[in-house]
Amino acid sequence: MVVHEGAISKAVDAAVRALGQRLAGDPAVGLVGVALYGSAARGEWVPGISDTNVLIVPGRGDEPALGAIAAALAAAPLSARVTPFVLPAEELQQSADTFCVKLDDIQRHHVLVAGRDPLAGLVIDPTHLRFLVEFSLRDAALRLRLLRLRAAEIDERLMVRLVVGTLTPLRCLCRLLGAAVPTATSAFFDVIPGVLGLDPAPLRALWTTSHRGIGHARPEREALARELAEFFKAAVQTVDRLG
Image (cartoon, rainbow, N blue to C red; front, side, top):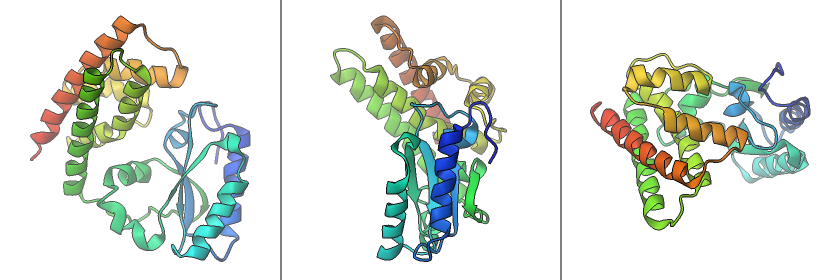
């Protein structure tokens, strides 16, 4: 693993490596592989803000294996902010339908930490992918609507979570439309107008907030909420046309 600007810190890198080595050395785990994904794999990890997303694939999902994984995670320093995604090998392909949006993104962007690549050969069904992309975007649109109806003042943190949570489905949507999707989120925003015909300004503004912690005044938040609602509405219509 190469540590570079925007990647995880050396301390977190060491903690993740130690986690991988411990899991690989414990026969109760029967480790297949450990991989970083998310912002840590995209070079967009922010100290003190980003979680360190780690996919752990044990050879089995019995109690001894889960107990050993729990002990290894407990030994990792809290400062590493390790967020595990544990899928036993026997469940990995079976989960490709339910978690296809997430697993498709991890398969495309991950950094192997220990063992062998657990995602090599994983098959993602594009039909399931389209369905869950639509579900994710409709769910985001609904939650934003409820947020605007119930809150006397728009909570920017909740809008940020909505945006961060929909970036992966939006990447999948662009790929379903045949577009090449850049790894970096900032570059991805630049391709959205050409692929979806939509203005990514509200996405970019709220994603920047998530990385820099710089919020917006109330009138700006309300304007962003309106723009984001229109964006989600149009994105849902686009994926719906895919059939």
